[in-house]
Amino acid sequence: HPQLQESGPGLVKPSETLSLSCSFSGGSIRDDNYYWGWIRQPPGKGLEWVGSIHHSGRVYYDPSLKSRVTISVDTSNNQFSLRLNSVTAADTALFYCARHLVSGDAFDIWGQGTMVTVSS
Amino acid sequence: QSALTQPASVSGSPGQSITISCTGTSSDVGGYTLVSWYQQHPGKAPKVIICEDNKRPSGISSRFSGSKSGNTASLTISGLQAEDEADYYCCTYASGSRIIFGGGTKLTVL
Image (tube, helix red, strand yellow):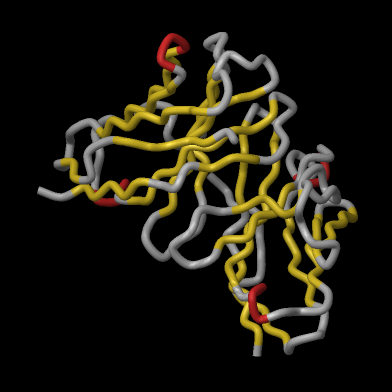
């Protein structure tokens, strides 16, 4: 069955760039019906959408993060990635990758999440 | 980002019904038939329990139901069970190609 798995460093220094990848198995990231997104959850807080990308390259970001975020897709390796630059302690969070329909409907498949701490 | 408004906490006894509200605007909740609800147990990834305002994905108990009136969506859980104790989040597509989550509601089963 389809699964998502996040990977990347668990510790990033302030002002540096956070980089995460998400691998999709059990299907193709080239499916026209889906967007591939990133959601973060600061410790003890709620869910925050970061952005989403289609395999065609169409991408959209949360306005509050748009200036610092880049999401890209690697169809040959069936994965997509997140880069968040100029990080601060406020970016410390559990990062999830997830899939949702092009229509904007629900995130139906989620990764297990990966914790990223911003600290020197 | 401006989160959708949910109560911080709700509680109920086993067998009872509870409702969690999610209030937005005509640019998000009221503007699209795309409200979804997620259940998150501690240490686990969220799980979708309602999509497209009121549809249950395959495998989700009929005890969970969604509805919407104007700019407010609601999640109702009937026949409350101990396993329902979790955090619940609403989510919707919004104008400007955004996705917005609610602040989350902690459900306690007494």
